[in-house]
Length: 384
Ligand code: V47
Ligand code: SF4
Image (cartoon, helix red, strand yellow):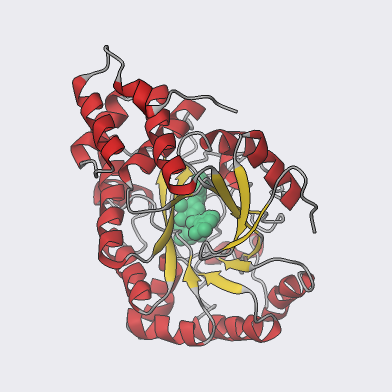
């Protein structure tokens, strides 16, 4: 367990920079910090200071609870019409023989593998295949819904959706309403990367832009769906781009209130066109999670996605504002193992996840996709 200074101790430190002290006071009063404050935290906030602030906020909100869910992923294909430079996973259509394209039956076989198992969510996300269209995915959603009505269907990034709706000649609202009617309940947070065009035009120029991503999520919220938001950090972006990204999400959340959680995703550099960029250190990871917790005051949940971050760093983030570790995953995603994460076969049993959380001095709570609490676990718990 990482022991941090309390916020009240931080506030009495005589040698603290006066601007940092002013930010700490805002946090203590529950006031929103500005973009300039956020930038100052990146430039001057040392890890212990940031941790004390982030931990104060997370403990006030969640009282030591850390959420996880029991889920599995379906990745229909890694064939993709887009060419994001950071992606280690996709194959262009001309080289589709090097990738995978699951048929409807193969995807239903994955769903059937979980028959009788206590999973609550399926997360469907993949490349943007030119032949897997809206009709195909609506059929998949309807089949999963009919086979397993209790599963929460979370799927399709704004990037996949924008392409599908454009090809189907539907507006965002029409396309989303159609998918919702066949069973889609939530959107995952992928595809956000960094909204600012100075970065986006270099790392992923050809897919939906920042405004388009936000519009899809806000439209989904208007229809009564929830979604997550991500940010890909640790490559060519500057602190100003990170603040801009988080600020746009904070404004979007002010408008709709529809985001469940914020998920910073650490850039991993294996097997992609940005491999020459060194990965961030664990210290930088922890600073970023802490600042995200302090800045994103209207996002209740901050998620560390352990298959990408690695389970040890993910465990450390629990002392720096994180209150969610995503799910058991069950070895059903390849996005991060192909990009060089230490988690080559990501799978944790519920017991292992709970042990990780308990060892960090926190309270493991299984949740549903919408953060409804299912069960709190202790050292004495038995596991199904
Ligand atoms: O948008 C791709 C990222 C995302 C790399 O909503 C990379 O619950 C690091 O968004 N290094 C897709 N990251 C996955 C995603 C996600 C994952 C888990 C949970 C949820 C959720 C959403 O993966 C992409 C991109 O930002 N990514 N390549 C890479 N080399
Ligand atoms: Fe395609 Fe997504 Fe990879 Fe970009 S990150 S190339 S959209 S699979």
